Image (cartoon, rainbow, N blue to C red; front, side, top):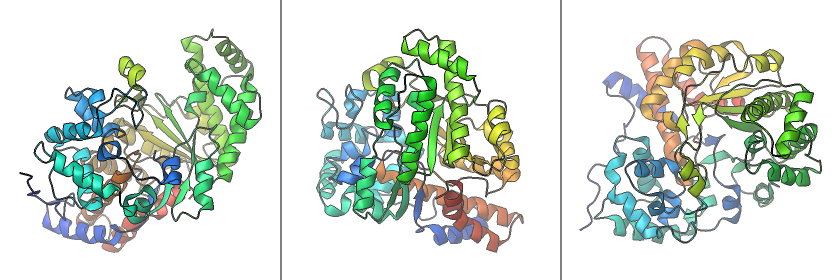
Length: 476
């Protein structure tokens, strides 16, 4: 028989155990618990919001598209096919992937694997707060939970737009290809959707000329920009045109996800030669690397010209397992952190535009050692440099607390950029932001208890961290 959850979510979770700190943290958290959510970096689909169709089933909503979930199950030996992924890596999957109910059963049967992880916290929060479920996931409750969730997903209040409004999301940034016409964003704006949904310009695929689809992408970009991308200068001009299109549709930021942060310029002649060899299929690995690093530099110069905030996510070796990438595509759980460096790689770019009032760059990393060693010192000097929130493997309670300790003493709070949920899983947005608010309340309470700040300042900072700070950092 289905068993009720025996341990409900603790109201003081993540607020600490020392009574004096916990009491103050509780007060600070209550002041911001229901504040509007500013989500300046994420991967929720604008088209999904524009279409506003009901979610098809619990697995397609909570399991298959969430690589935080699928990677932990895969690491325990569960095939990705059993989690609903098919050859395209998309949801809904093509034939051959497991049926939704079977996917959900797999999650529930392996629920113990998530103990102690932030993924468990986010999923439990979602089941309880979003869907009002009292059943704890298990092999015994899997079917009952599935039926309960499937029934509730049909309700109008659980459609994508209604959920975002219910969550209190005020601003939501998507991630978009430069060639995207942004029709979904235009529809949302024209229909008066209450949440401000803004696009984010991400040109990664155009930076790497040894990519399999690079030449084809140039053709698409040339068509939408009206500029021939058969030359390096043409590509730069097309990207500038598309950046203006994004700005006209509400964008305030760009994003670049790179393995390393080197932004090293080439001469126009060198870059043009590599561009030509890439189109001919003759580019070498070393040339492609130099081209990519030059493109990052050029994107920085563009940011200094047009004022779009440059986000840089570095220190991840993406698509680590080639067979999985070839079978299921990207974003399937095997992006692996590597050591990251920022001071030397960004020196030329920051010497060129680091003190420009128009330029702003937010640095993200999965290498914890870089926060105190390089990123915080850079932010402590350069007006343009802001510190990105813990991301990917670091957006967990212990790592978030280490992050605050690592950067605050060097750069303070106001050179951070607020929390980013970085998620495709729409229903986890409130859980992720709630976790961040609780942890920041605890950190501020500890500073008060240690005599480092006054209570009044802690209250002001708690509010600033969820509102003023992300708005300012992302020019929202």
